[in-house]
Amino acid sequence: MRITEREKDVLYSSVMAIDPMARIWLFGSRVAEQKKGGDIDLAILSTKIGRAELRRIRRSILDAIGEQHLDLVASQNGSEAFFRLAVEGGVEINA
Image 1: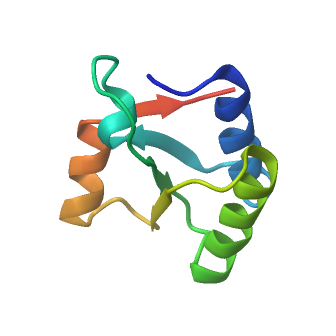
Image 2 (image 1 turned 120 degrees about the horizontal axis):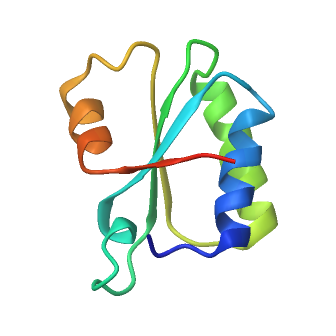
């Protein structure tokens, strides 16, 4: 996983501030140690997080770690094909 411990903490705490029961996965290029660059891609499973909450989470993360490419995908039940692919290839982020 190519994020710092501080970035991991910021990602986790920004989501948990909205929904302490949410689950979070990092997916995409930042999962692969051998790759370089890339944006931060997060998949969030939560019944409480919609578009407005995603904007708040995004702003919280960027305020803490600085401007960079950040993609957030949320699902209430994890049934969407893209979400399932993200989770299957991703790494769950925990405290």
